[in-house]
Length: 309
Image (cartoon, rainbow, N blue to C red):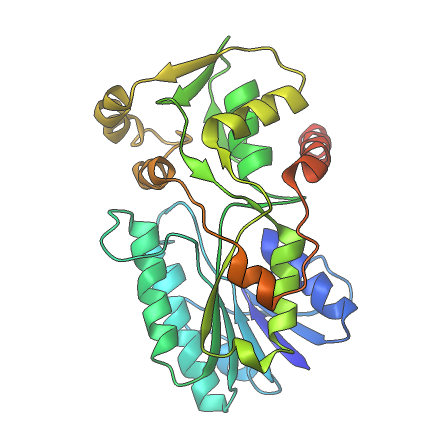
């Protein structure tokens, strides 16, 4: 199958491109740079947020996968542009080209009225997908872990070790700051399982018109995730819980500091957690369901190597 991935040069896109190629699909990736690292894929320049390059990219496509997203707004890169407008432009280009099959990357927790601009944008994009008339499937993953991720190798490593991580500055402290008691639930899912679910959906007509929540085999509290990263890094720093009411007061000001590692929007999402039951996902897709414990040492070792190099 000829598959067009829109926004396929990031963490998930790179893994998904490899997965599709291994299954014999022909993969074309549209991104703003027009270059990528996966041998065998064809990279083309375009911008979903403006619509640039979408029409010619659709020419030979039999299926479209939309992965474009940002977790932090910077300058003209806003949630509205990357998530909502990019989705709208891609859907319209697919409709105009007669491409019926459409897979969409959303996020677990996407809903109206959450107070999170990210979740609100994801919910609006989902509405556009459902109203498109295409043969759509929506995926809503929890935190995604794997080689190249930003959360475990960036955010949690930064909390434990301090220093610069992925362009953000974490102050080196003798303690590890923890938001409240850290008992917000998460069920992170391996990027290989996410990629496999997308690939299998292309071959499963019963997934058309369905939304699937993607989660891993175990639920953790945020505190437990921090401790696992701390222990994997060989640190003995104690945790320092910061009361929620203090965070509520301080973060609106701190988040305005350039390079501060936590935005107000991310804080709102963190406090509600990110988990779901895996029953439907497990019934439909044949996944390895790899555990965080199996991947975490590899993730941290690889990120440390890249940082040192």
